[in-house]
Length: 257
Image (cartoon, rainbow, N blue to C red; front, side):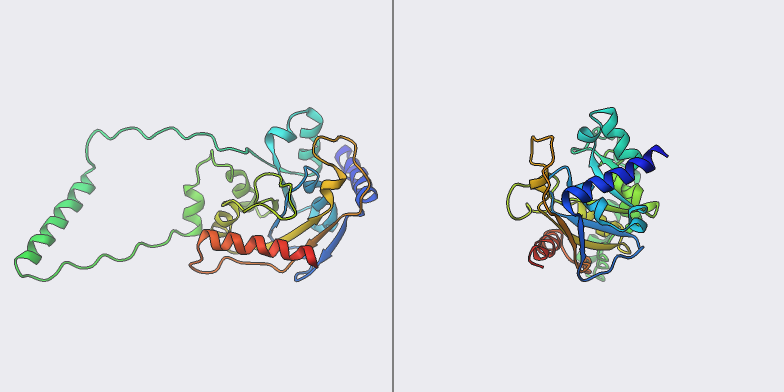
């Protein structure tokens, strides 16, 4: 009950300070599993997107929150957990332990070497050429998720998506200070590979950095908006950087809408 009351109170405060206008271009507000990805200029970005979503979408959408910042005080931790249902992420991965050294060459490797040598002998003796190796098979989304280390910063997001939630992410990884977002990091690409069925919706957050400038604790009333654009998708065979650059351009394009 306390979390519900705080939710209504925060919603009223955010809308009073910012107007919290949601503009939908290219896709309607729809209760389907989505990854919303947006520019990042303030800790208030998470709150503004949460307030801009309709109530039926807020209940199924979880924003990500930097664990070191949003758990610094008991109140921050309570509000991000009880009100926003946020997904905590560590800004840096925990270093993985190095693998134990192998005591001996695996039997399977020795057998493969013996087979290769036999094929080479056959070819040199004038026999049939060895069979060409098949091209490596691309891992499935399920295999990609299973191979993700638990220490990876994406692991909490993967668990949230596997449970059916939508999420809000900021692919820059840190707050920007220019007119355009910084180059996107690889997280969005990896999530698109692991969850090809989830709809990727770009969003542009306008003016929120002026409401809560870095280092300030008292918000300033400024009219803000969140513009949601046409979904993008990872094309078959598309490489990481071209996809991330295209997704970034989709976000920037909404600035002029």
